[in-house]
Image 1: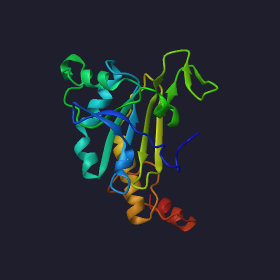
Image 2: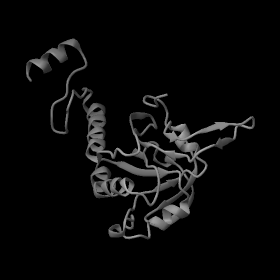
Image 3: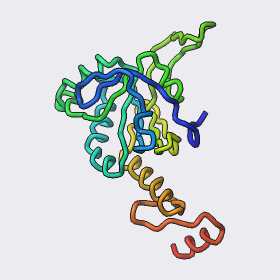
Image 4: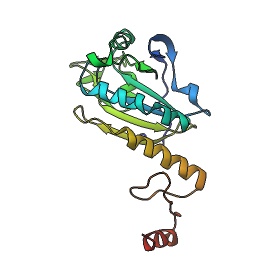
Amino acid sequence: MALVGKKAPSFKAMAVVNGGEIVENFSLDQYLGQKYVIFFFYPKDFTFVCPTELWAFQEHLAEFEARNVAVVACSTDTEQSHWGWLQVPKEQGGIKGITYPIVADTNKTISYNYGVLNGEFYYDENDQLVATSELVAYRGLFLIDKNGIVQHELINNMPLGRNVKEALRMVDALQFFEQKGEVCPANWEKGKEGMKASHQGVAEYLASH
């Protein structure tokens, strides 16, 4: 089930912040009323496509922060695994230098609640998750507004890395709509004009393009 238009599932979990500090009870709720959130999942630490994505978000972190957006990553690895990967230099395949939070979804419930958990599993009579294969997250990405509502989601299969600039574009589109009250047509980018959400608005936009 898509989460767009719904409240982002709440959670409290271990996380590594500021490139090496392990914290308990990390929650996206801390951003409510304060910041937008890009919350993205990746399959596993110490892999190949994953560090390219984590570095891409780090390289654009200042652009997200300028838009009042918190970037938060998550995988089903432990906080110790996250911490260990953060000690490995970039040139050796590590993520040393990543500063945004990385959540440890060790019990897999965050990935499950966000609809990105891959693997064979079921819930027993005690409502406990029982896995019959390895459980890892797909490459899910969720744009959450200040009210905690999911405004955009994207889920890729394991081999398909995401476009971080597209995530920035979606932030720009959401903020443009909130500020101007106009909708964003196909291929809209920051700096371009929007469109009034009416038949007349559509006609005027198409006539001018």
